[in-house]
Amino acid sequence: MKRGFYTILAAQFFSSLADNALLIAAIAMLAQLDGPAWLTPLLKFFFTISYVVLAFLVGAFADSMPKGRVMFVTNLVKVVGCGLILFNDNLTMGNIPAYWLVLLAYAVVGLGAAAYSPAKYGILTELLPPEKLVVANAWIEGLTVASIVLGNVVGGMLIGPKVSSTLLKFDFPFIDTNIDTAPEAAIVVISLIYAVAAAFNLVIPDTGARYPHQERNPVRLLLDFSRCFMTLWKDKLGQISLAVTTLFWGAGACLQFIVIKWAERHLRMPLEQGAMLSGVSAIGIAIGAVLAARLVPLKRAVGVLPVGILMGLAVVSMVSLKWMPAIYVVLILIGAAGGFFVVPMNALLQHRGHVLMSAGHSIAVQNFNENVSILVMLALYSLMIRFDMRIQSVVVVFGLFISGAMYGVMRWNAANHRADPHLDRLIGEVKH
Image (cartoon, helix red, strand yellow):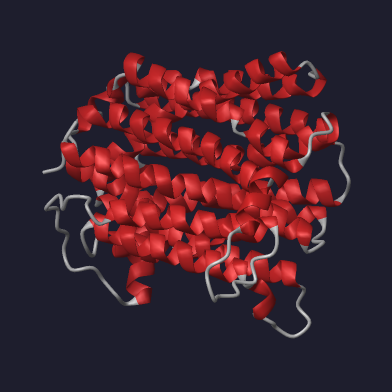
């Protein structure tokens, strides 16, 4: 791997670590403000909405300057969002409850993340040849998973009584910070982690990739995005990989909240312990990502699709578990199955996007689809919670949906290969 790749990994690790710790702190902040339980999954909804609404803009933004600079600017936007969450009581907006202001502030963090993502993945196709993309994605996903695990652990520790009491004893000389609660102290620490990520962004090397002058007219940007959107969905390899990654990230976003709620109601765990438990499946994703990097070359990427069916069935098996060792094993298996099939699919999608269009634009299309899936699944999950659906029923419905959807994608892929038996010859071709 080229030297700059490891700087990208470090920047991604700290930014993702802060993202995941911030979610736990924001959940604690909502609880502190007496927000209703059905608002909790809407945190992720508000975080994700920028990915969808601004999808036609962020690709052009990512391609308008060196990717490291884009990542630096967007991490600073995340710091601003943290500040808005922290001082929500000063952002009075008529009779709007404070917990709604937390959701709006969290959306600002999502804005930074939406603009960050095309640069994070787009730089891989600029820096590395196609045959390195599966391994590179395994590194990215593996380290992202490590940051998810640690982010959940760090978030849980920061809002826990032991660490928060120590943090709250610290005061700047001659300055009244008004930091009086565990969630507030946690968000201050998380802002510092974003600052570390921004520092790494500053030393990411310029790959030298330059794209034609990026359009600034919103109407033309929207039309260009629509063209890229249709191009990827019409491509017989692009559509399969796009369908799988769309399903995976929508399911993954829901699974994080489902595990926390399942731990609360089924295992009687408090938030800080449930948050740590939700990170266990991320360990499995890292294992699956490593196995995919070793066993699945780019040319055989579509061969991993049956593993997605097993992932859904493993989710269903959670409903009857109460013995903690068995719970850990199942959560790790769920994550391993997800990591094993999503890493090759992600690499294939990046490669086809880079061949058919520019790096930033293809990742923006990918983000749009994946985050529409997240919004829809989170909205449905929130409704289930709103109407007091039993968490065991939610788990079963969720797992069966994953298995059924992956089976449908397998049939779709088989039909594509019957129509064009030599379809896989497109994998590995380079952009001229």
